[in-house]
Length: 237
Image 1 (cartoon, rainbow, N blue to C red):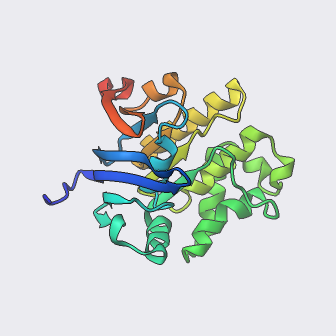
Image 2 (cartoon, rainbow, N blue to C red; image 1 turned 135 degrees about the horizontal axis):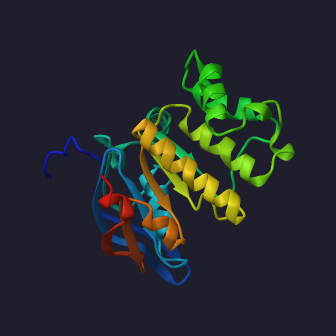
């Protein structure tokens, strides 16, 4: 294999995922290969069941591929055990889930602080406060998730994802559970933080309008990379 380009924060070679069912082996992903440059924004699109969320889980080290290679910022994810994958996620990766995934017994501030504290950062509170201010929630730091609207919970989740200063942010349908107004706000925040922090953004979406806002669009059909197109941001600047 060629030496990983310093510009490629994500490199995927021949990625495949197969699961065993009662009817036999089922290929969810087949021979996926692509590169993502540092600071880019990439949308993964496709019909329901096309394999796009599985691809995101593999890229984030939340699942293990059946075949192929994944390099994240030069680290060979495909060779790591669960403990090392977890360490890599803590150091390099942020993740925003469709269902927010906040800890219900923690306040907004405590939820955002949690990853930084687990990573042993001494300035976790200061970082969390600054990010909550950036997402417009400095007045809600003492509130619990049950006291926040869906849009507010997703803004907390975004602040939490950025608190560790991730090299790569993965987002799985980040605005799907929100109304139009809050969805647009969440999307705006993701791109603003992507640009301000130089973080590479990779998101799964069924929303073609959102996908077009990215630098690049990966079209997944039937578990295969059907095509790679450019979004609007590829032509900006």
